[in-house]
Each structure stands twice: as C-alpha cells, then as structure tokens.
Image (cartoon, rainbow over all chains, first blue to last red; front, side):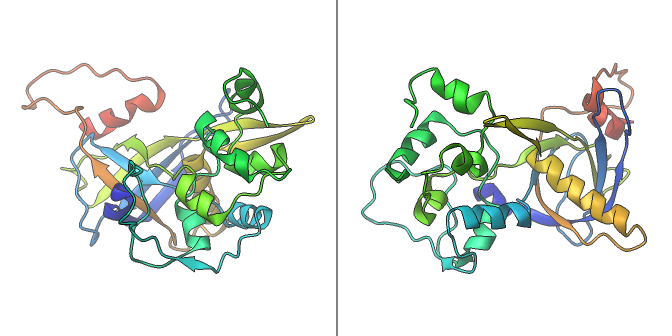
Length: 127
Length: 145
C-alpha cells in the first residue's frame, strides 16, 4: 500500500500488439506511457511497477456473491490497543473509500488461495 | 472444509489455481464478510516490468512490453474457466478499447511507480557489451540500443 500511495497515474499514449498468431498462442503488448506533467522520471533499464485493477464485471460478481453493497463506504482507523504484528500492506487510514473502489483497486481476486487464508475462512462457513 | 495441513489442499486448491473469486463456487457455504475481505485477503501487488525505452532518448515516455498470460482454473465437477493474468487482462482490455475506437485518444491511465534495478549500462559508451535475452528478456536492451 505504501508503494500504491506513492505511485502515479500514467496516461497511456499508445498500445499495440507486437506478436500475433504465434505458435504458442502467446501475445505481447507494447505500451507507451506519457510522462509529461506526471513528475515521474526513470533511468534506462529500471523497473516499472504496474498496478492492475479488477474488472467491473468481476467486482459486481464478487459483491453479489457475498451480498456487499458497493456504495458502502468505510474508513480504516488505527487501533491504539492493537499490539500484534501489523500487516505489511495495510489500507490507508483516515480517508473514506467505497467497497467498489476498494474491491476494484486493492483486493486480488485471482491470486492463489493460501493455506493460511483458507484456515482463516473456516469460521465463515455456514454449517 | 479441507484439512489445510493435508495434501488435499494442494489437490483441491493449489493445483486448480483457485482464487478468491472462485471460493464460493468451490465452498458454497462460505460467507465472507467485508471485515474479513478488507483485513485478511490478499491485496493487489504491483507487477514489475523492465523499461524498454531510453531515458536519454525519450525522457517523457516510458515503454514496456508485457507478455500476455492466461491460465485455467478448475472449479470442480468438470467446470473449467480460462482466466487472464491480472495485468494481462487489465492491459488487454485497454488494448481492445483502443482497437474499438482507434482514432480516439486512449482514455486510460495506469498506476505506476519506478524502481531502480541493478541492470545498468557500462559507465562509458566505449565499453563493448554482449546482450542476450530470451523473449521479453530482450526488453531492457531495446533501451540500451
């Protein structure tokens, strides 16, 4: 989240497919971002870190599955009584965010489920 | 529910590439709450791509090349779905939008930051270099050239 907050929205200047109809069915996209006015600079062969978002279709499907109202807003606040280990990437605190925005920008729907997360889900299964 | 310490986990979840969005199909009794989703579930992490453009030649442009990836998710009972990699699907959607209206400006911005790498040019241009890279591994050399 720290990195997300320091990232910048880069306008896409051009996007095109470099390989088409390859034997392995693969394809490669070339994307050129416009840095003018963004304040972002780089050095040759540095790494760019890209944040993708979930599709509207997936967000709405997910919300329907778990009966979430996408217009609901929430604020994360620091719990002064919490003494455990803080997650490495907590949400920003202090600013309001809708479920729609949080699900679209921040929750990974397709990453493989870990054993740890599966274990944490057990109490949330109805008998 | 599966005993998470068993090989059943690999068989039922890992090998089938099950993600959060598939969980209710696999476990219909699951009722995720907003608290759980926003406090426990994986956040979208950035994916890193080597920059293909030269900062000397194109200081106001940043070019990357992304190999599109797809994978199959086995939802059980013979149901399988093909899914795009997160960034692949995201960029492919922008590309498709552009193909649908190629004469219009591209109305899309992508959240990005830059991280330095250890992959650098020699200090002087006189130093001979031998460049080898498979597939999109060629990308940083485009910037070098």
